[in-house]
Length: 369
Image (cartoon, rainbow, N blue to C red; front, side, top):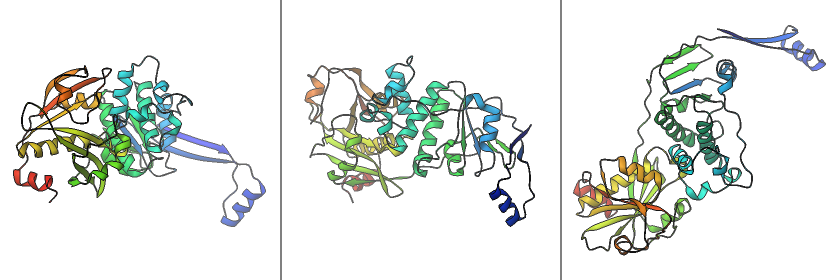
């Protein structure tokens, strides 16, 4: 396929002066042409059109997928961002989609779109795009308005969501650093007319360092917690660090319960820029294996749908209480320290049954050695 774009050149005095300075022959028209051989595989979910500025990415995308290019969405100015999603979507579907693209913060869900940060707006726009364009969604200038960490982590979360929903998504971008995080089924570079088929790239491993921290570290994370932002002073706290930056927090409490030797997760938060790739789940699992190695039974209760669904799918966790509205009394109330219960939300309880950490390592991390 040949794609040609041309426009008229008006020979104004400034244009003629430029022609003279640079010895450019006068022309009545300016044209560019691309040869496109894009034979896509039969089955795919994620594609990437990538190249430097001016290489023809947008032109090729609009020529081939014009009707499927996502434009700017209109968001309610004085209502929650939740009200911007299609009317036919249930709140459960909206929440699941927001969480899956890495925006798992109920306190932020109730805010209008325009007050969100660039990174949050990026995730919300992507969720809206996948909700509105179920057959094929093409996003131009993908990740151009966010920093590279948000771009990479967000790309991984979005690609995972697209594949889970069995949709088709094409990112059009000038940054190559997102390619291995997207793990695209194909990559097309317009400036070389090269199509690379197959998932040849693999997402880089996210190496985390877990350290015991002072409870004051909670100040960095507290506003992102979806319920009570208080922290029990008896908590034993840990942070997960990625490239030396604290990205997730977890706090443990001893469980006052008729069953001996039980500890529960009191608070767990992943910062918004790092949500959607399993960092919080990894921190839960690692510290739970540490608690188990120290001779305790690790437990967690949660009302967050994404957390409940993830724990229910995991072989490392056994459901002790299926999601149900808490009565405000009985066994689970007396078992909790500083917990806040509501009769309006579904609460599930799980116990960690996965492998224990090496006891020596567990003792060192727990004691902050």
